[in-house]
Length: 157
Image 1: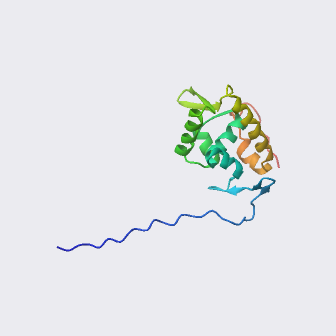
Image 2: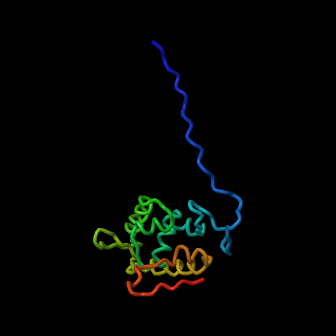
Image 3: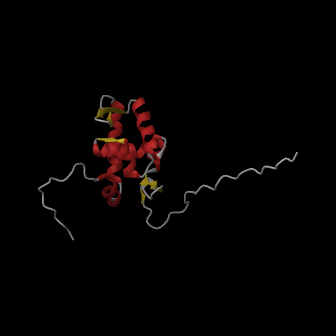
């Protein structure tokens, strides 16, 4: 009988977050912004307060738009749908968010009955205002409804 010698399989090396800022990285009074997956930026203080980037981005999204569903939030920031749904569920269970069904979608919004949430929204509003204009345009000024069918298309430039 012959025994096969098994070699341990080495996991693939994970990409590491850059330590030094690269061209295009931005800083603010609260420190360096940290790039992640698609080059988006998030305040590291918010990440620390809310536990992770996904939760911070979910809350900033809801602060800006008032309500949203998991698919749209995930698509906006390039997150996985499962990761986004997990954060929405966690925030709802903790009383930060409430949800309602609209057709086959679950829309999430802030729980305005929670006094702590009202203070949290003030903080998020300040953070949104502190974002660079390019990031505000890209992530937080998306069209919310379809164009009117008879509205003329105006080309700028």
